[in-house]
Length: 468
Image 1 (cartoon, rainbow, N blue to C red):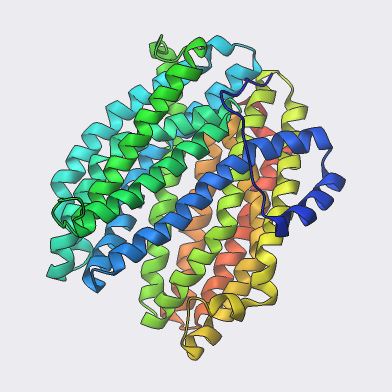
Image 2 (image 1 turned 45 degrees about the vertical axis):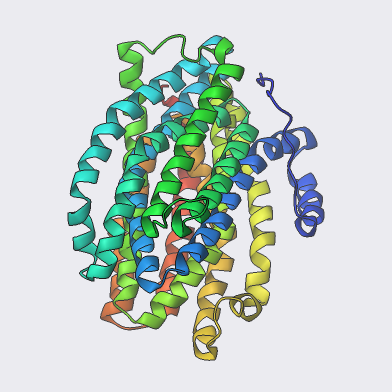
């Protein structure tokens, strides 16, 4: 059963991709199922890509203040990414629970999980953010000793910590909208937040409309205000669209709240360790050379162009799998994950193809030094080749999260990243000095291996017994 949307979803597919996508996907997935996947996944992807694009605009605005300001925002952003990750996993528990209730045709109870997620966000994010606000100077001092960066980075990080409660609540709303086939609400709210952030940056960073020029602190304040604006919009949409589903009309029982917490906890830990692992990866590259850091920064940003659609398809699959399991149709749940994976693989392969056949053309936009450009070609090609395979892993991983098998996902993700991938990167990079091709080769092999593991786990079907 599909919940009616409050607003029509309008998705614009780039013309260069649409023809190839529609042709191949029509051969892989029946039209009715393909349409449902597209209507659910593409708004999620659109919201994520808007975030990536406006992050670049945000960086460009702060970059006008000088290298110390840019370093402060960069380190503050990384710290916020890692420290907030453990809260953002709440959306996974809300999505899995709400999708299961929808499949069980218990429509009036789908938002009870959202209410529980909001309560958990308040209980966890508030004390955690207050503690981090207090310890912000120590956090930054651990990362860097440059006093110019410290003086700007600490107040920036504190502004971001103020918004952690809103981030946790927004993650719960995102999980609910995606679970109930209303991902368009998530996309539109996210775009409003990003545009507001950029506008407020212009006001607070540079001192417009009579406001004092706050510099880097203004950038953090803008992000915090925009995040809380998104929370207010979500509450308005919840009151408008989800009252009949139980929004703010009841809380989960103590037993249900405990189950929601235990369902979300592995996802919270998985996101935290993944974020910390990405930070450790950048640290290891930094021990190789400044050139390696510059090249990796560009390649990572380009990689996100393909990774974000994979995440969007994964979140869509989580909802479809959860709904099918709510109908007690595990065979259909298994088929949904495969259908989403096939479509996602085609889309991401089309996106990655230019990076494979013309890497210099793409890299030349970001790297002007011919020497750096030459060194970056093969790392980008390795990323392009691995992205399509990685899409399968991302979709099956999120499908298992949607089924409620969050513990297995955490164990696999942590083991492959921290026990295999990161030690291997440290060995071939800083220790043996084999260069960026070896480092990115290890990254590509790790992602392909992870895809194979999640595909195997999906086929074995252990996720089918997960209780939500």
